[in-house]
Amino acid sequence: MPSSVQPVTVEVTVNGNKYRREIEPRMLLVEFVREELGLTGTHIGCDTSYCGACTLLLDGKPIKSCTALAVQADGCEIMTVEGLEKDGQLHPLQSAFSEHHGLQCGYCTPGMLMSSYSLLQENASPSRDEICKGIAGNVCRCTGYQNIVKAVDAAAKQVQEG
Amino acid sequence: MYPAPFQYYRPDSLQEAIRLLTKFGDEAKVLAGGQTLLPMLKMRLGDMSHLIDIGRLPGLSHIEQKGDTIHIGALATHADIAASDVAKTIPLLSDCGGGIADKQVRNRGTIGGGLSVADPSGDWPTGLHTLDTTVVCVGPAGERKVAIADFIIDSYTADLQDGELVTEVQIKVPPANSGGAYLAFKRAAPAYPTSTAAVQLTMDGDICKDIRMALGASASKAVVCEEAENALRGQALTRENLEKAAALIVAASEPPADARGSEAFKRAMLLSIVIEAAERALARSKGEEIKGGHRYA
Ligand SMILES: Cc1cc2nc3c(=O)[nH]c(=O)nc-3n(C[C@H](O)[C@H](O)[C@H](O)COP(=O)(O)OP(=O)(O)OC[C@H]3O[C@@H](n4cnc5c(N)ncnc54)[C@H](O)[C@@H]3O)c2cc1C
Ligand code: FES
Ligand code: FES
Image 1 (cartoon, helix red, strand yellow):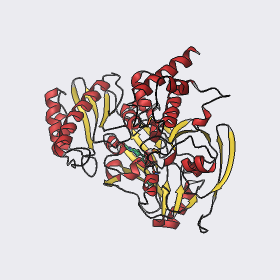
Image 2 (tube, chains in turn orange, blue):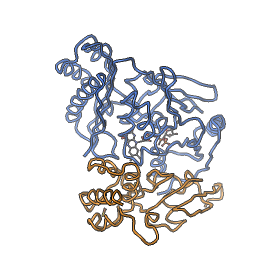
Image 3 (tube, protein in one colour):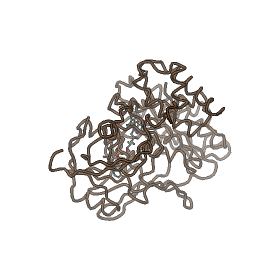
Image 4 (tube, chains in turn green, cyan):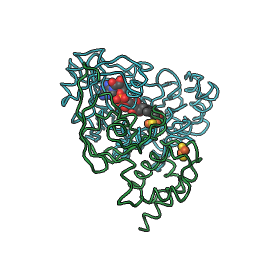
């Protein structure tokens, strides 16, 4: 880091684990999660705030981590796609994406999962239109979205039925 | 992509933020939600060596009604405003805040940032033009209140003096029998709108007592047209009358031909959305519930 710039300390809780790092203030949150913490599930797609591949939850809310500085997350709770699986069990959303062919190359999938996860937290039984709106900030170049919407719908039903 | 290196500050009071901003002048930038500034810094647009993060300043995220005025702190996010009780009182706020970009951007971006940027296709500047809106700015010389029409000077130019910050947006609660609506057409959720229209009106039975209209993304700032509004005041809001007034305000617009569409396409779009916004405003003035303000594929 250039010697003239004061480093900043960032303390975050990611998927329940606490981390503390000294970084350059210009480090983006997505780089922090991937490079500093080694959590490479969160992807960098466009790097220009459009595609949503970098979506993670900051204090429970989905944000684009390529459009946030790591230092802005200081003291916050973060959930990344790695936090979905519990005790070796895939989250119902992950199983549904697999079952309903909701991914092809899989590049958009971590972001899709985090946006869908947030949607189901707010709305346990979203309509088709609500699912589309919920993932409107996530671009997929492969699937044409149909199977993603099917997967989210199936996961919502499965969670409801327990 | 990384921004160029900068020194980072997170002041814990408004006074400290203003002091830093005054001290560093042109070498400093203020960071609120970062949804405009960070993409710019990543593209290395704009020179800056001191970043003053106001994102956590206390007392600037409120959304509340006091008497006949709604007070929205500069740091209130688009998402929080859309979900708030005040957006139930003034549905136009829910149309605007609930449709900007996508959920991820709405969770970060702030109303203070949206106004300060003064992007001609930004949603808040156009929407708020039809309400009785005052922007509160605080700087080294103290507090200043500016009407929205004066605050937005031109494309990407807001009336912010050296060392000044927007702290609050104040909106008068419209009188009884009022309704408003904001409509935006865009190519995709995270795209800036192609054309936008806002209408806020007050009815007296079937007669339009007062009306304000504005078009966005259609000139260097929100387009307003007294002639169009005067054509409707004191009249019934028949389709024919609305079409006449819509033609007047669209004639006053200067939509630029660009990647989002030709000038002719945009004029046709403006005509249709301003009429529909007026019809929605009218329906809401009668208590009808209508949701949604942004259209995209
Ligand atoms: C993909 C994408 C799509 C978008 N689409 C739309 C859209 O369709 N419509 C729309 O309206 N917006 C859109 N936006 C922009 C978004 O609404 C921004 O949130 C908003 O323009 C700026 O708010 P911010 O809090 O993020 O400001 P920041 O990015 O933090 O700051 C922007 C500028 O404003 C200044 N500033 C911020 N707050 C203050 C303050 N309180 N006082 C003085 N100066 C201040 C900063 O110094 C900076 O120069 C989009 C953004 C993205 C990333
Ligand atoms: S990588 Fe962040 S939005 Fe595309
Ligand atoms: S599965 Fe390839 S981008 Fe979505």
